[in-house]
Length: 265
Image 1 (cartoon, one colour):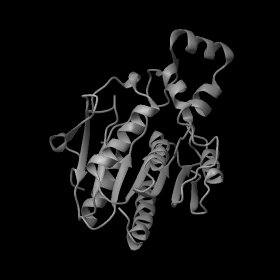
Image 2: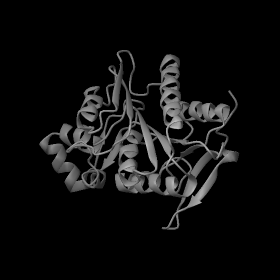
Image 3: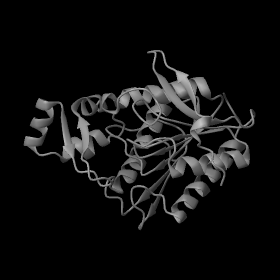
Image 4: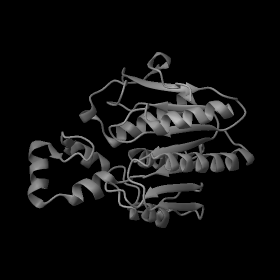
């Protein structure tokens, strides 16, 4: 696989607030839908899933976009200053400025929340969604609701809380404003009124996002076009070779279906 993510190839988009967002893009053919990858919380655009999907897009010559959110990777901003609203705005701006026509969004973890919110903001531009361990509403259901009363008080008083990191010895710090802003972006507290196909890939060995989250998304999806694919052995990262192959297969299948439908830009 060629190196699609070398930092020499990175471009930057100027945002209305004067900050910059880093992105990588394959322009591809102009007459077909595009593919956009949305990474997880604290991740960047150089992860395995992003690299593999970029290569898939190059081989098929379809438009592809991946980018770093505010406070992530090579983009401007401090990570702890970010909010769900900030990152939704990033996704919408990228969609508006760097893509054209219908797009298939692929969202991992936080990206699974952002893909839904982006589709709500730009329903005419989003033709389908693929979620990988999608974590909508995680600031409320997986962070706030899991805290004890003293921890909640501490978070409100100090403005943050440190929790164990499953991937590193250092704790993860969650600012209180991430939780309060998250409440303005909750999607599973009501039916999701999006009429587009969604496929959810979820590991049953995921210790960060319970697999029932995927079921909850399916239950709230008003359109009947929702599939949940459970992998009993998969963890949150969903990045073993067989799981990467499954991601590519699902993305290809939904992309081909979208491509065969009449396009409305």
